[in-house]
Length: 296
Image 1 (tube, helix red, strand yellow):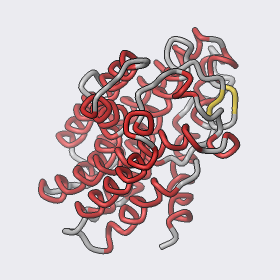
Image 2: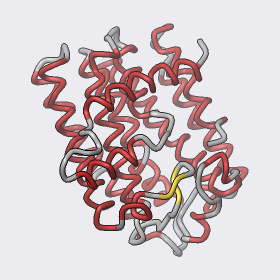
Image 3: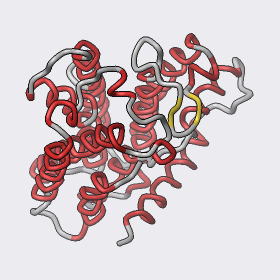
């Protein structure tokens, strides 16, 4: 399997589906729909929706039948980026090589665009009950799990701790809390959503959950490293924003070499979680090392 080609294939499915789900840019009030589409179609690897589809594939499901949920996770992720970039948060001017939403549309519209993306993500999750093969109980389960993963016990909780840790000396438990909630929680729920909607049994679902948690940690540590030593033209934004904002990151807390080592260990743990599967999870296996070898 060529992982990059498979990622492109999944990304194209998501792009086409998103084009149909999002209002056209001239739909009244046009500015909010333009802002939503600006951030959604700004690029990116579409990793979260790929995880949803791969979760379905891992348990014998059809990835196209979970496309509404896959798109929902991408909208949820995009909303978090729009809000993270705001002056009240990370105050970033560029994202994926383009001016951030608030630099183009203003802060008020950027806030509302994020809100609109979050709201639409739950609408799409509900659509799996109508257009997919999952039963209503599974759809409700996924909606509930995504809400928890995105809320104060997940991504938002991690973001709050991240904000209040800036400029302070933090311990290992704090940095692990931030990473496991800000990033790993969404990776976990993405894989779980796809698997649940495809009818996963509890044992393989538990293994996939374990995998995705370790993958999310590896991904976030690599993000920290890229901000520390990456190239701006490759990562799409200025290098060193975490350092300027005095953010708590793995390289700053543990050092660059230990951060690299921990990313590798997290990838190894992710692979170990998949030992009970066969070739149906080859995409997930290859993804484990892609996330720590990438340059953007």
